Image (cartoon, rainbow, N blue to C red; front, side, top):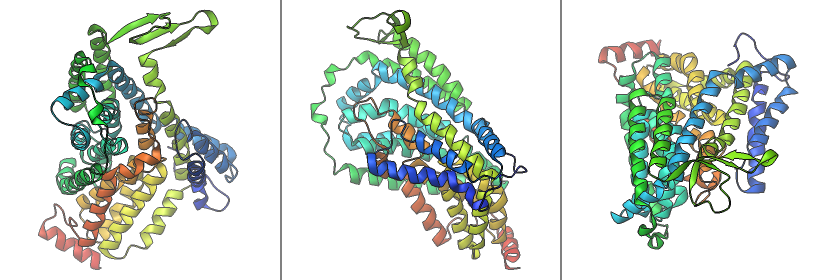
Length: 483
C-alpha cells in the first residue's frame, strides 16, 4: 500500500479520499435498480469510474496515479488474485468431471436431500475452512461441488450458496492459520491459540443460529428432488473424491491454498483423464463432442481457438480478480489520503466507557471492511493504532479486542452484494444448473448476520470483556481506566 509518509492531498480534506468508494457504491446501487443484478462484469465499470472520479479531487495528480498503481501492484492485491485463479482451475476440473452428479446420487441413495443437504454443506464448509484457513478456497470447493449437487437434490439454491459462504466465513473467523486471526491477534499482542479458544463461544453460537435459520427457511422451499434420477449419474465420478481428500489434507498441513490447489489440480486432472471422465486434449473435435477436455484446440488458421476445462477455470475468476485489483487502487487512495484515520478518529471520540469503546471498535471494523470489501486490511487499519489503545483505556482484555476485530470483520464483508466474496460465489453459478445474482445470495449468508447479532449481544451484556485476564490484571486495568 501507499506509504503513509506520502500523503495524497484532496480538495475538501481527508474525507474526500472516500470519493472513490462513494462513487463505487452509488453506481452499484443505480446498476442494481436498473438491471436487478450485479454480474457479468457490471462491477468493473463502477470500480473504474470511482478511480476516475477521485482523480479530479486530488491536488497532486501524479501522486494520485502512483498511489493507484502501488495499491494495485501490492502483495495484498495480488495474493488473493493468484489464489482465486488456482482455486478456480481446481474447482472447474471437479465440476466438469461430474463429481457433483455422483455426490447427488450418493446423497439421494442415503435419503439426504433438500434442506438436510444444506445443513451438511454448511458444516462441511465450516470444517474445511477452519482446517485450511481460507474462506475463498472453501467457496471455490463448495460452489464447484456441493452447490450443483444440492440443487439437483432439491435444495434452495440461494440458501445453499449462502450456507457455503457462511461456512467460509466461519473458518475465516476461527481458523488459527487464517489471515484475519493472525492479524487480529498480532495487532493486540496476544497469542493465536488463546484468541482462538476465547473466540470459540462466539463462533459456535453464530453457527448454531445459522443452522436453525437454514432449517426454518428451508422448510418454506419445495424443490424438485423427486425428479432426480440417481441411475443417470456415472458412479465413476466418485473417484474424484480422492484428489479432493488429498487436497484438503495438503491445505490443512501446509496452510497454503496455492500449494494445495496446485497439487489438487494436477491430481484431479490426472484422475479424471485416467478414469475416462474427460480427455487430456482434443484437436478439432468437431460438432459431436460428448466429453470434456483439459485442453481443446479447434478451427484452423486465424480462426483457431484454444480453450478447455483449464481455460474455463481461469476465465471464471476474471470478474472477481479485476474487481479486487481495482478496489485495491481505491483502498490505497483512501489510506494515502488518510481518510481511514479521519473515520477512526471520529468514531473513537464517541466512545464512552467499555461498552462504547467496544461498539466503536466494532463499528470501525464493520464500516471499513464493508467499504473495502476485504477484512484483513480493515483489521490492520483499526487494530494497533486505535483498537489497542482504546481497549487499554477502558480495561478491555486484548483477547476480547482481537475477537471484536476478527468476528465483526467476518460479517457484512461476506454478505454485501458488491463484495468480492459474493461476486466470487455467483461466478460459479453463471453457466450452471441454477445461475444466481448477488442480490439473491446476500440475504442468505446467515452466518454473517448471526455473528453480528452475537457480537453486539455480547457487547451489551459485557460477555468476554475480561477474557484470559487474571483478577489482578482486571484490577490494574480498571484502576488505569478510572484515572
